[in-house]
Every structure is written in structure tokens, then in C-alpha cells.
Image 1: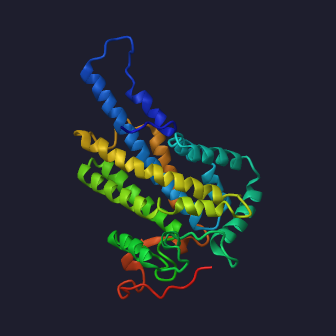
Image 2 (image 1 turned 180 degrees about the vertical axis):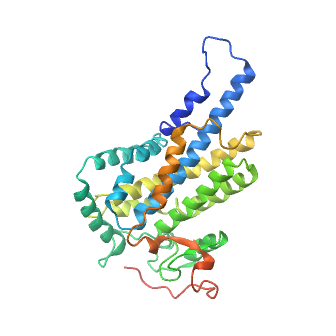
Image 3 (image 1 turned 180 degrees about the horizontal axis):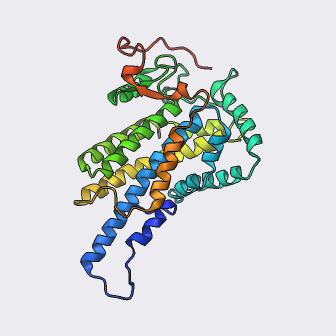
Length: 320
């Protein structure tokens, strides 16, 4: 069963509720309404997960700006996070973003930029490494075997990091970029009523999230909580850790829902305007360019120099 969110998908209630509650409702009509309500709930969460992965990619991948803070504290973001209000950490994220929106924007950006540098750039030792491999192997070296496994997942989808071989492939922002793209693919398959592709994509996405994101992000979040400041990034990573766990569960539940019986997929002609509002906001978010983001972005593999000639990882080096 797919749980219905409390955010922008609430608009779907009006589309599925019986017109006259006092009149007898035919059983077949009631079942059709229930099926449509479930389909709208799935559709809403597919839109929400695409938006959230895109938001986390931008927020963790580049230097913060006033425009990024505006996206983080927007009504759209608050409504999307409300879809996950059953989780305490996601409720905490929503409360944090509400408070963030009430603070002086310029002061927030200045403080967040300082924290971004200390969290992701250095030159001092980072409070916690934003890479999967050290948490899996307990070795601080970069470009480990697990890095290659993540790279092959990117390559299987015709993608590679823009800074291929210069920065580790298992960086948290790169993973969010990857999942934002895959989530968008699943949304497109759902709206095109391609059940086979949709199911295949959910299986693959659940495997990546469970195999490469839920495995370390909670520990990474704990490490960031030891940082001397908590302007933005400890809260965001903590929320990401909770979100990927919810997303892995959603994929499993959506597959069960899809496999239960023949389901009506596809974009609904009476789709709530709130759905389109989130999609438009996601497009604006995708277009957001931040300093340093290119270091943490994927690109078509055939556009990445040197990718055809390297079949092994570079020598591992210690990561400060």
C-alpha cells in the first residue's frame, strides 16, 4: 500500500472524492476511485523524489547562493517535504527550512559559504568525508573498489562524472545527481504508461539506493554533526540520510502495488495543478548553476575526455 502524503498531493483528494457522500456509491465506482487515488499518490511521490534528489544534488554539489537558499525555503520545497511528514527527520527538515526562510538571506549565504568550504573543500581536514568508500572499507583512501562499482553504474546509463578520474565517483553530490536523473526516468515511464520499464527502473533504483546510499549516509551525517557549525549542511545530510531510506522503501512498496494487479498508469488528464507546479520548480532548480557544481555533475560518457582508455582505478591516495 502506498501511503498518501500530506503535501502537494493533497490536491488529489478533491479529484478522487465522491461527488455526493450521501448517495449510494456503486462498488465498482468506489473501487475505481480507490485505484485512481492510489495512482495519484504514486504519481505524487515520483514527482517528489525527482525534486528532492535534484534539490540535494544542487545543495551539496556547489557553493550556496541566495537563489539556492530561495529554492530551499520555497513553498514548493516545504510542500514536497510534507509528502514525507511521517518521518521525524523530514519533519525536522521542514521546520529547519521554515526557520531558515525567516533569517537574513545575506547573512545566511555568507555563513553557509564558509560552512560549505569547511565541509567539502578544505584546505583543513574535513569534518567528515563525503564519499561512500571510506565508510564501507574504513580506509580513507580514494578511488577504491567501491568507487569503481559506482562508476560502472553511471557508465551503464551512459554517464560519467564531468571531472572523470580527477575526483571520486562515489561523492554524495554525484550520487544525488545520478538518482535525480533515474528518478526522472521512472516518472517519465509512469506517465507514458510503460509498466515494464517503470518496474525495471524501480528495481534498479532501489538496488542503487540500498547498495550505495543507505549504507553510509547516516554515519556521514553523524560525522557532520561533530562540525563546529550547523548552518546548513549537517541538517541537509541528516535529512538526505532519512530520505534515501524512505525512498528505498517507496520503491519496494511501489513494486508491490504495481505487481498486485493490472494498474492504470499514465499522466492523468485531471492532474492537480500542484503536480505541474512542482515539475516547473524542478526545472528551474535543474537550471541553477553554482560555483563548483561542475566538479559534482554527471555528463554523457561520450562527452567526457579520456573515458574510453582507462579500465582501472588510479592509485589510491589519502584523503584529508
